[in-house]
Image 1 (cartoon, rainbow, N blue to C red):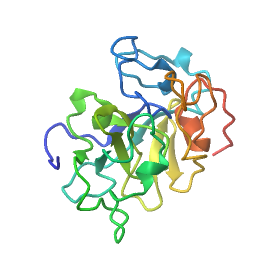
Image 2 (cartoon, one colour):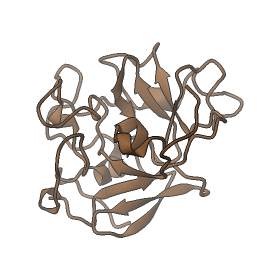
Image 3 (cartoon, rainbow, N blue to C red):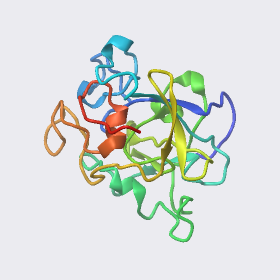
Image 4 (cartoon, rainbow, N blue to C red):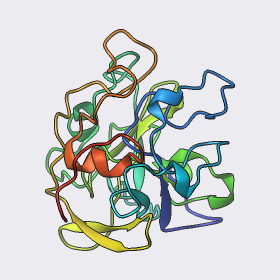
Length: 225
């Protein structure tokens, strides 16, 4: 789907470093995965300052992103990965490169990429793929959703600024985060209560400083920015 239109926004809520079911309701209904929902914002769940145990200056509240413009840019659309990104394989690295990326123009999706979903649309909908960001891949990276489920995915912070993008911290500070921020092991499975190859509940973010900035109560050490 490549459309532009109603209810546009450039500001997205931070859902943390989750991937598996990160966009599902966090109230215990409909296959909720509370373990994966570690950011300030969660679907159908109120979170307050008291819940930000990592400190309001260390935790991201929101990030900027660009709005769909019909150009197939990795900044403006989310790619659906039906062939290589299927449960339980949801490593961020599979979103960063592959046949869905134009090899000659890596800032654009290839013509064979299907199911592109526009970002920054229908802000009142509140769905994660409309108005959410996660801290897995660094700023200005592609965004991807798993085949068959829009609630499993990576939703990158991005902008038209050279070399990075802005985030809003919970304490109100605005920080410019460079594309080269440390992102840990992008081949790691995310944290999830589903067991198997997923990391267990309470694990430190496998996605480095960037992943740690997205969590609000995980006690990771974040160097001064």
